[in-house]
Image (cartoon, rainbow, N blue to C red; front, side, top):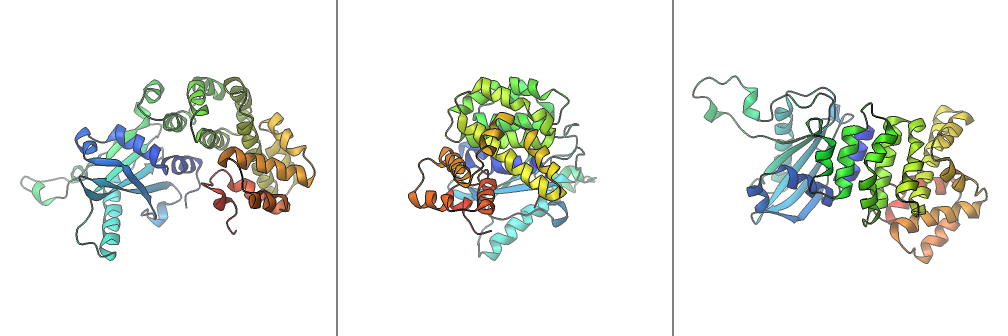
Length: 345
């Protein structure tokens, strides 16, 4: 499983069908989109990445109805600074694995596979995007050579203004801007000011708080806790009434600090992680020193994400010990529902 912050942001964002559909609408030819029922888009289980590459790449597989038939949309995320000139060959291997899985499931016809690559290196993509370009073809040999191309979204060659102007949700536009800009040398406070319009848009989105938390976590992981402190001011200015978001960010940093403290084996590690983020937000959570206060804090975060909580959920949280509260809080970011939070370790 890939562990880079780039992969984590990509997978958390684009495993949502709404964001995946945004990307497909931007990349695929109009004639193909006209025959594609994006309302049927559905995330499929499994990965087809080579074992040796899983630490550096993330892939997502979707199914969709295409011209009345079932198809597969395969999205591979490439985030390395160096461009892989053999990407079409890699994609062909993954496509063959998809087709092998279909045959193993007793398919009588192979589904269409449309490969898509989202790329954001510093150099931009400068390698072939079609399979036949990998060959030195003599005259008359082209008809015997497999040919296909992959759809490429190269963030390196696009302006941030162009990303903000895309016909896509605020979440998609903010995630793409974060992938494009966060590793740059631009001041983080300046970036956040540029994103203030998108942040305001997300305020009214159904899953806006989750999307913002994904991006803030990415900023923390890539730029470090010192620069991340600027987030507090920006969030307060653009959305001062969103106390749930502030508490959610505080809970993430609280969890992060505890993990760092354990890993480093010293109390300073925990304090560094806790103190270098949203100080005011962290104090809100940490000053609740007794067990009941910690439980109530977590319940507010859960209610902010999932709405009114069942009585049995409230009772379970109020009865939780420190270890359970920390585990449930750490799961809150990725959870799609309450069951994900309370799943067995």
